[in-house]
Image (tube, rainbow over all chains, first blue to last red; front, side, top):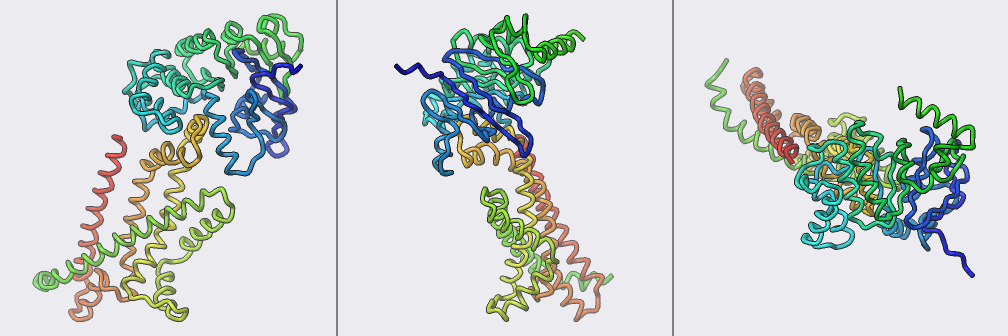
Length: 257
Length: 215
């Protein structure tokens, strides 16, 4: 009897920059439809772990699997490029600083990759862009340039851009950290809607309230290891590890200040 | 000032200015071609190409253009390279300005935010697709003005080819000074014509830059 494989399976992930160990043997399994938050102080390795999943920061050890495909397998350069480009189409990523393409309108930001990589016609790509932009509430801005949008609007377009590739999983790398406080909510709402549609998501965040209300599981990372993990009500209300307790206390104090 | 003389020689200066313009255009074209190669080499994932690119840049920026021209034109025949003066001028200056343009282009490309390439790659684009569709369109806007500076410098450095007897503006001025003994007038005409050429080119570059910015 084979046990069902996890949707995303990170096995003994290790990452060093020179002598600095950023990830020290991290394993993490995510089921389809699960929403996992990764919290922790800056420098804890949480972003590095997220960026390792689509190989933006390649691991120096360990394996990452998406369903039955190993993401970071060793292949000759050309074959690896082909492999990773295919894998990345299945993994949507949203960045702290949006990284919208400033020379393209909102519409083209969304249609560029589907047209180029999936061979969609102009009409198909337009329909797709309209669908995704409607979903994030940005359809009215379809002909704007990114420079004409607020941070929250940019991030919503960035989410639509990622969704247009029909990814199997979405990675959020501090998607609301660069936003003015009053713009955080509109992005959170979009993410909540994705959660309701059972999109598999891994979310690196500093928004504890959001993590608590949306996520199925929370990981607390510090100094390259997962210190504690569990359901949000346990991690946020009743953490067992002292480091988790300290981090949350400081974080909450910072928010009240 | 001898205005009569200036009027009489002016048509010959115009002809020489045309040579300067031709020389500038050909040199700029060759320079851009060298710069595209040089930039590709400098940004290659192969260390050998990066080394070759860096060597090209430091070699040609690290020695006077005049020496490079002399080596090519006077030294060339010794190693079997026979070029007429004009061709030697174009090649010598073109390869030289290409080194400067390489740094301009590379600078513009690496000035595009890293996140742009990352966003393109995470959507599944290849390195090449990301470069052509996301990074280069943004880098182009950044490089128009500094390339304009390179071209401005290049137009003025065409004066150097007078030293290998290409009959362009500076050489023409020198030749008429030899027969008229009026260096002030002759260099004034040459300077004025350089200024007009540079003004026109400068306007063209400003126009291109504005257009790129307006998308």
